[in-house]
Amino acid sequence: MASLLDSYEHQFGGLTAEITTKIAKIPNLSGSEKRSMISSVEKNMDEASELLEQMDLEIREIPSKDRQRFSNRLKSYQVEMTKLEKEFKRSRIAYSDLQHGRSELLGGDDASTSEDQRARLLDNTERLDRTSRRLEQGYAIAVETEQLGADILDNLQDDRRKIERARDRLRETDADLGKSSRILSGMMRRVVQNRVLLVVIGLIMITVIGITIYFTTKK
Image (cartoon, rainbow, N blue to C red; front, side):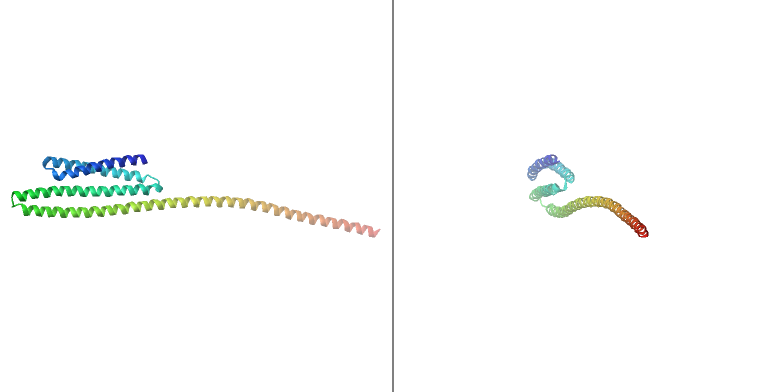
C-alpha cells in the first residue's frame, strides 16, 4: 500500500514540475503553439487530478493509525494543485493582456471592447477562484468528518469487543457459581443426613440404656 502511494507521489511530482515549466512558456507563445501548449497543460492537469483521486482511494484503505499522516500529505498536494490551476489561469490571462496591448497599438476602435472583455474575464476568474476555495473547504470538512467517523467506528468496535469479553467472563462466573451452589447443596444434604443419623443413634442408645436399667432394677 505504501509503495503504491510512493509511486503515485513520484508521478505527481514529475507532472507538477512539467506543468510548471509549460505554464511559464504560455505567455510567450501565440497561435497554434499557444493552443497546443494549453492543451498539453490541461492534459497534464487532468492526469495529476486523477493521481490525487487514486491517492485518496488508497489512503481510505490504510489503517486509521497511519491514515492521518498520509491525509495531511494529500492535502498539501491538493493545495499545490490549486496553486497550479491559478497560475495556469493567470498565464492565459497574461497572454490575453499581451494580445489586447497589440490591438491597442495597431488600432483603437476595439480597445474599449477588449478592455470590457478583459474585465469580464477577470471577474469570471475571481468567481471561479472563490468557488474553488469553497469546494476545497467543503472537501476538507468532508475528509475531516470521514476521519472522525472512522475513529468513532474504531472506538465502537473496541468497546464492543470489551463488552463481549466482559459478557464471556460473566458467563464463566455464572457457571462457576452454579457449580459451587450445587456442591454446597450436596454438602448441606449430607450434613442434614448426618444429624438425623446422630439423632437416631442417640435415641437407640437411650432406649438400650433405659431397657438395661429397667431390667437391672427389676431383678
